[in-house]
Image (cartoon, rainbow, N blue to C red; front, side, top):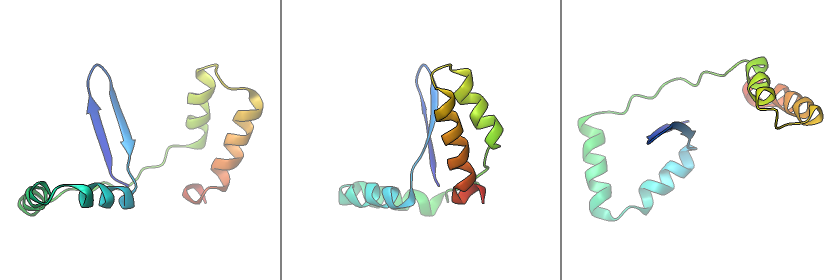
Length: 87
């Protein structure tokens, strides 16, 4: 899944599903879309393989915030284990 990094006072990566990326490109005015396609032809985009984090690391990140109850963390763990990414 493509990622974008916004750099302001903080950096934040977000994942964008390919269908959403297609919609974004399709919604561009024709002239901007042509410029984008020319740029992609001139300098191909290098996609990186998705690296999944360990479930324990994800749970530790959530637990470290002290914002979530134990029940939520258990549900999160079970959901992650059942997800297609971790099967």
